[in-house]
Image 1 (cartoon, helix red, strand yellow):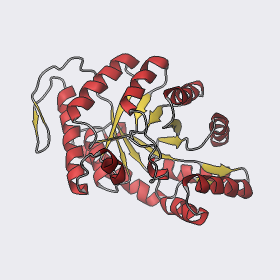
Image 2 (cartoon, helix red, strand yellow):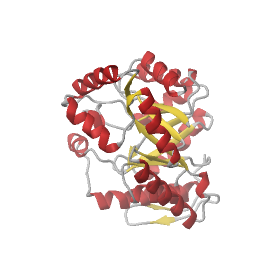
Image 3 (cartoon, helix red, strand yellow):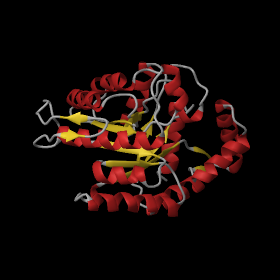
Length: 307
């Protein structure tokens, strides 16, 4: 199993420090989320503005040397796929081919409301996501192809530069998200679930790839999450309490949410067992989300995970 790091929020200098830490540890990737307010899933009431993720990624493309860079993920409600296409090609050029574009439906309604952005119902957002993926595949195909959908359209031409497209879809969806990943993407980022449920998502993605005439084994499967763990149960519970306090939620509620999602938690032995179960279900990579962590915490986590 490969490990990667996702860190978001803060100044550009702080994010760059995390990226260089991931590079120094030889991780398989470094990712940032695409939110317009900091906090995301762990602090839904946050009103602290975040930096623009694609602008940050452009800086990381020049200020890092070897780490693979990922956007994990950009809501399709933020930008027209033409903007994503041209920005992807630009960052790919700036990074020497080290950039993977992540796209999703978007889910944080309050974030859209604060900035006056439309937030269509779920079915419409999934339709927009699939059309955006079709648009990107058409634009980066060799030769380029035309695409005409309900929401977006692309006339076949060589927009130049037109590098190989590396794209990821992520989310919690049990059917539509893995299906879209299988049809169009290089990587499915599916959030933790029970071994049985996770295996079902993987199978749906691989079946969709095969149905689309793609190599199902070429699809990389990953998951993401914070690691709340300790060498002992007492240390785990201390870290859980601190995490719950940082997001303003009761510890019992946080623990139940982690249990329902089967997020890696507990002693490090228990964390490794949970990750091993997801690996049996098909997971190739786990993205460690640095939420309130310090660099030393990530280094310690990697030491424990690699035992």
